Image (cartoon, rainbow, N blue to C red; front, side):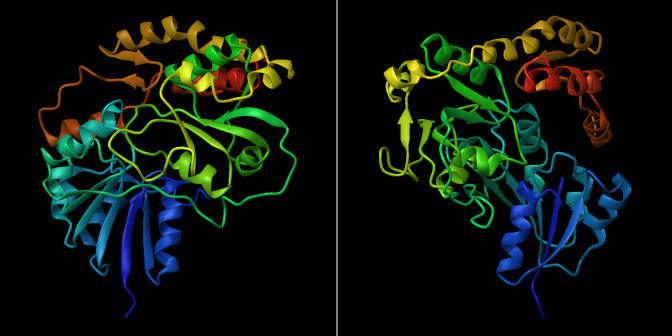
Length: 330
């Protein structure tokens, strides 16, 4: 009889998503995978699957932000949680570790530095770093047209990095792409990565290395999976970062001054979004989004209710702000 895993997460059919990579890995070693996707299925269906699917060897929850605590408690097979977000800056991840991780039989963190925090709530916590998919993140022998590039979501620190490099005369190109991600990385001479914190290697690190890209990334606390100037190059701060590229060559390249303008919409709408958040006794955070920091959880029903809340300006932000930033105001 084949081994089976019950994989619970979001966007399990997204070919670039974490859940898809995990599913593919289990299939490659002979497992059958039962997927429960809370972006597709109803809350009731997810709940019933967690509680009553018993013909699997174990349940693996990716982040578990939409799983009801009672369902974890009622699950009839061993349960595992794998968290890929930093509890230092991601309040939802922090909330999951404090309130739900104690209910799991086994917990994994993608970074070592935060394991002491995890172990306050579940002693059976271990380190499990992220990875790349060698079938997707491949080297492509194409001309490298981009001198310095960064691919990913924007947050305050990354916006500051882009502006700082531009001010130093280094024309960094920013992209937010899923469809052309592999081509963009292979098209870039120097790939930058800046973590939200200095804890844990992000998936982007493994992916760029898998594509044989030259990677500059921030120093990672308490981890040494990769050696400096061997597999990658570490930088300590923005000043240190500017020492690595050939600044003379890059300064003579075509400067993309529009990048500074592309960032401006985030700041232009910040006051408006903050005012909306204030009406909900909450805050707007450029990095984390809509944060219900004052929501009081007195019972598990409160937990479920808070997880179901949607941002009142989600459509506005996705439809108006992000396209403006992505396409430079066009």
